[in-house]
Image (cartoon, rainbow over all chains, first blue to last red; front, side, top):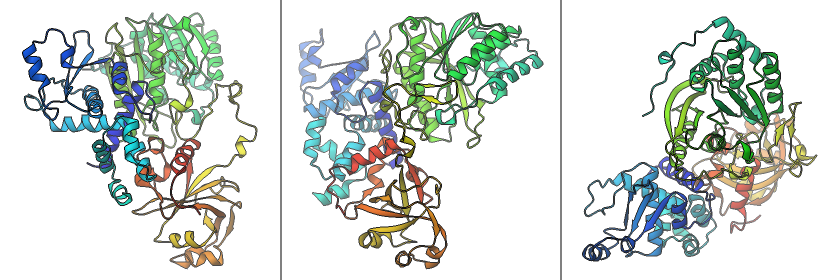
Length: 182
Length: 438
């Protein structure tokens, strides 16, 4: 990914933060963030009328196969459905990914990768990179590496997994310095 | 899809060209000198005339709020209306922080017979709107600062105020936006504003691209687009983040661009001087406060890495800004190349003097003739070096507050300005750093 492309995602993340009324660099609560952008977040078992059989099937899906999806409700709100079978840190980024999909005008999709009719890798990359940049802004990641501060602390503060932060370090081009310091 | 509203499709207003040009001349003669620092850049006359004729049919007979109006769109509507050349809005309110403009507007309206249609209000867009104005207009119109250094955030504050002013169910807006697809900042500002509008329940109903040019000596090719918007639904999807509240200058960095830093004036006074809010007045010696500069060295020309190790003071060329660099200013030493970044922090300890480099300094020049040449130079004292852990561009580029840093945008040169906001951002990087200290 080019630096310009990464900067584009950073800029879009900043825009979404501003739109949601969040400041540029502080940790956010993705669920509150979604609410301020007129989206509701639900788990499958919170939706009335879903048959027990279907529910059992959905709840049994591994998070690697399906972490979440979204659809528009008749009142215009975005309904984000989340798998319970994932860590809190993974849930955070899944919520933000769905908001990023909406931001870019991607078609909402409630079905996971296995059964997904319109799975577009470039759209998924856009959404994931933007979501990650909303959750942990590039400046914060780069400053952590520069100051040689532990990424574990960053992860706890920002509700992000170690894997996500290390992915961000790579994408931002700071991996060698991080690796050398470690 | 926005519909095409280019001029050729518009009904004629039955133009009387002489009368139109005379009205334009009256406006342009009366307009006070533009303050570029506050992004007052008047539109070219012929484009303003075309713009007024373009929007007039839609605004005829309506109540229209102008959120800032340095161009004088409201006045040209009034002047042309008074001459019977178009049907003007029934009511126009001009909100602007420049008291000179408001005084001019009242004077022209009285002199040319449209004072019954035009009101003025001294208003700073950072302040919340008076409650009695909220949702009382049919339309708003704004040609705001374009936010070249903040991805259009300046535009979005003006748009927010406009959206607050118009009727909840039927309000419309006319927004002029930067429109140059070749410029990244223009694309970003346009795209961000579109996304912002959509997210907040507004849709674009018409857009005329490449519609206006400006009296802008240093950027004569800048163009703007005219965008018409309306509410997509009565049910606002998301409240605009700055609506109904005061906004601090810190929330929108580089609001007026790179040339002026907070505190911003509350108003521009009748004498053209900034008027600061009590408590936010710049101190009397603000003009003498130290500036911050980046001084850049090229290792291909000067052995800077060694000199920073050995020397505590060095003479530096003032190839740019020699008239502004002064004793006491802060200096960030930037080394160019693959590992570009800040390698030392220091201060200027002499005013610029035309002279060759010192005998010690000559040892570090790759081509000694470059150092012998007499040119403005200042003595810089290094207070802290970061040689073991320089603050590299590869880190700084991820700080949105530094996206406008001149040395990163246009890296050719020796002496680069650093705004106060940029210095504060850099200072945060330098704090608590484990980098080596001199």
